[in-house]
Every structure is written in structure tokens, then in C-alpha cells.
Length: 434
Image (cartoon, rainbow, N blue to C red; front, side, top):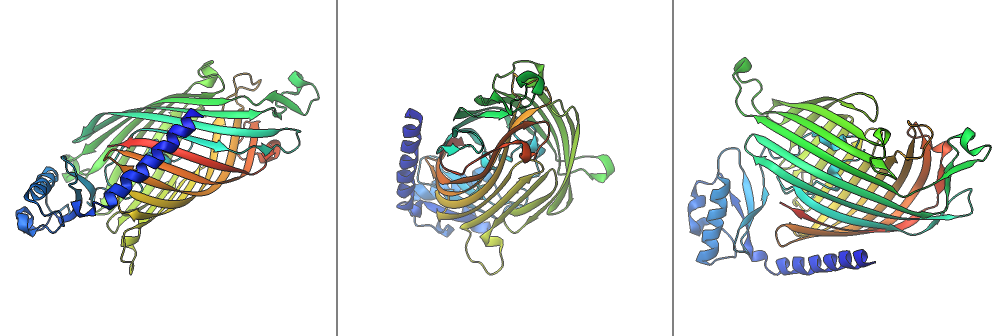
């Protein structure tokens, strides 16, 4: 209960902070970095008219430089340390990053890493969220199921400038199932002729991830053919079970190597290859990326597809407050979101749809290749507030349906599962961005 109250207080605090920003909109100013007269204090248009604010604006612009590859930046000079709210650049689009589809989660990182208000180069360094479901009946069994989900993640950017980017991430999930339900019988020899076998335990996941990226700025090979390309290496050690790292059968190692090659000014191809001990087989992927407009892009391929559209890039639409996102991982999660910025850069409302798939290796299973799968669809909406430069908070509510739990070797084998009735859910989240 203390967690719920704390998260709710964070949301209320975030809303008040955002209202404070709304009253101080005159401290935000958009500057064209290609304008040769940008260094002239009198030329910068903004309601923050004091010499001190003008000086801070110039300092912030100088920190990001200028040139043909830059278009505009939006600055916030309300504090002692001015910072860029948005920066537009042909190279600032989200790239096709295969670390988002590692088997550790089978879900897109859009729900934890993306900064949906189109701010480039922002990283989520820490986040925590709690999702609470109402109790629902379990079909075929005289019991019901309650569920609380807890998630926290911490990222440390050891290197994140220049050509080298190295990040370590620790991610933890807990699915707290409050139920007396039993899973379908996965072992007739163990449970005799009984239709139901093992109890459904609480499930956890803990992962340790290393992501490395190297940007090739200049190469002498083939007259610089590989200029602008990126090499990536991802290594993950994780456990998804009711008893973490109980044995080698509940421990997974995944290693991936990827290569992104720009083929035109606004297009790129990414290929990936690696190995996952969870599947005991090599894995591979390919993706095509197209950037268009100021911040919109699409990535099409397997196993990941991503689309982001900002309304300013739609012909005939004279606003940048609307955003649409679509993310899908083959045999994994699907996430769509339509959002609107009430206060651009600080307060956002959204509606979203998700199709989630979670899997765990139950420590007491008789078939070591079997996994417990929990799937559901969610339709909801909420509000996100960004405040104090580095913090955000979210509150979301909605309806969970098409819920199913089963234990088997195969995905999408719903016929063996237990259908769970629909439930309402409420989610709160807070995080630190940089």
C-alpha cells in the first residue's frame, strides 16, 4: 500500500510542476541554428527578455553548436542551467536497435526507453512502475485471480559520447499472482489422471544487460563506404522463473551482434545475428529504416517493426502536439499509442493498446523445455508529466482482456491454458531521464 500512495503522490507532484511550467512558458524559445545572426542577442525571439536570460540562451546554443546538419533547437531557460528540450537533426531519429528484442523480455523497449514527446537523445536511467489488477474469475476452476505487477530498471551509461556508447542495465520484474488456481497438467506421471497439476506461483525476472555501440565516422575502406554506419554488441544474462537462477535450466545467455549501414541520406539497413541459450539455436534479423519529416520514422523488418509519426510531418497539419507510435516484436509484444501534448514538452495525455506476452521457466517443472506463459491485451489511457528537467511520472488506467495462462513448450497454444476473465487495471510509473 505504501508503494501505491508514494506513486500517486509522485503523479500529483508532477502535475503541479507541469502547471508551474505552463505559467512560465515565456522561458522557452526556439532558435534556428542555421541562422547566421543567432549570436546576436537582440535577434533571438522570446518573451524572456532579460539580458541574463539572453546570455543563458546563447550559452546553451553554443553548447550544441551549429552547422548544416542542425535545424532548430528549443531551449528552456527557466533555471540556472539552460537545456535543450528538442533538437532536430537528420541523424537524431530512433534507430533500429535489436537490443529491444532480446529474449530477456520479448517486449519492445518503447514502454521503458522511448521519450514519446519527440525529444532526441534522452535516456531513461531509472524507472519504477506498479500495475494493479482487479480480481477476476478463472474459467473452469472455482477460484479467482488477482495480479500486481512490479517493475524497476536501472541503466548506467559508462560511455555515451563520441563514437563509443557503452551502457549496463539491470532489470527486475515481479508478477504477484494472488490465486489458488492450478496450471493444466503438464505431467500425467506426476499428477496421475488429474486435469490440473502445479499451483501457479509468483513469477520473477532479473536481467543484466550490456549494450555497446561504435559509430564509424570515417573509414578508408571502399572510399568511405561505411561512413555513418554503426556496429553493436549486446550480451544479456537473465533468469525468468519463480526461483531465480535455480539451475542452468532457469538461466539464459543471449549474445547479439548488429550492423547498421546508411544507404541514402535518410535510409538505412540493419542486420543482426546471435545466439540464445533459451532457444538453443541461432537467431537473426534484418530491418529497413526510413526517416521522414523532422522526427518521424519507420523501421520494417523481422523480428521488429516500429513506426513513429509526429503530426508536424503530416501534410496539411499545422501542429506538432500529436504523436503516433507502433511497435511490434514477432512472437512477442505489440504496442500502439496516440498521444497529445497539452503543454509541449511537459504534460501529455495518451491512449494506448498493448498485446503482452510474458514467459517464465517454473523451477519445479518436469519438462525443462516448458514455459509458463501469461498473455493479455490492454486498452487504456493516461497522463505523463515531465518536471524538474530530469524526472517524469505517469498514471494510466484501462481494461485488460483476452487473458490466458498456460504451461507448454509452444507459444500461442491457448487451447491448453486457463482463460481469465477481464479486469480493470491501474498503473503508476516514475523515472529519471537524461
